[in-house]
Image (cartoon, rainbow over all chains, first blue to last red; front, side):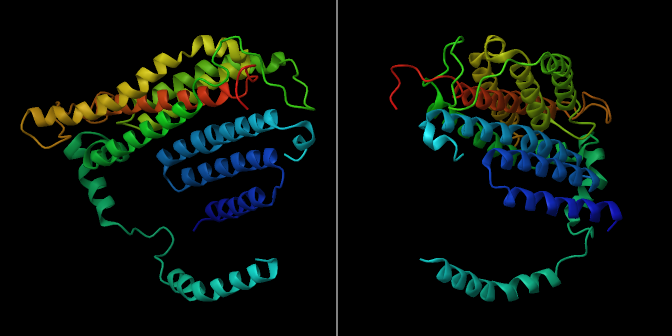
Amino acid sequence: MSVLVSALLLLLACAGAGVVFTRSPRRQVMAMAVNGLVLAVLFMVLQAPDVAFAEIAVGAVAVPLLFLVVLASMRMDRAPRDADRL
Amino acid sequence: MNPKWRLAVFLLACLVVAPGVVGLALHMPRFGAPVLALGDAINAQGTAQRHVSNMVSAVNFDYRGFDTLGEEFMLLCAVTGTVVLLRGARGEALDARPGIVPGRPILPRSEAVTLVARVFAPLIILFGVYVAAHAMTTPGGGFQGGVIVASGLLLVFLGDGYQTWRALVKSRVLDACEGGGAALYALCGFAGMCLRLPFLSNVLPLGTAKEVFSGGLMLLENLGVTLAVGGGFSLIFLEFLEETRARKPDEPK
């Protein structure tokens, strides 16, 4: 296992922990996008460019966008006093 | 169940599962060790058999083309479900007002964002088409290319706003792409059956390896997947972003 792969695996663990330990949903979405990005780089290094392409487009663009829209939509429908909890 | 009990159950479950996990971890193949003989076999013979150099495409569209058909219809079902749930509620009108979130002002878009989005949107869409078109020669393919095109279209929304984006991205066109792409893939399968060959047989001339138009029927299947994935993802984005518009006065809560 090369130094690059080990470093990326460590980075991935950090990014994953970042997703779990971020409490605010909006920041968590961004943490998830970063996690997807790191995962895509790891796939690239492990010589799986096809999966890296899919991961970068789905994990770093599509899924975070859908989550952001859902969060915005929920905040729109809530009464003002509930809004600051999200 | 209070937290103390929950912790106890968790630790008990850990005790039960731990021996299995440790045992599996000790018997895993070495990191990077080749485990599947099938992959090596396809790498060795794929180019000679199917005249393509991207073996992932050869597996997706030919050797295991039937699996991709299932995947295609799974996507179709997911997109249809999303559309059925979300269509017709809010944001249908092109001039629908943006929704108001209490305590968060709607800021005007910065010109830098518009500039970056306008420069990169065409480039990203072009790159998506390139990735999809070169499925047989280089990494990538219909799925990847379709998703890249869909995210490039999203930049129009970021740079020029909801109205311009909705005027450009027509939901009827996306419907046709999604359904037509999936249908094209299925019809490719029947082409072989018309010639008394098994479903999804590669009936077209295979062409020369390492050229863009090689691989025979795989090219058509790839086109179908590109249309279905690009249309499907754009349609999901469209339906979701409609939900960011203001509620209509007559809409039930």
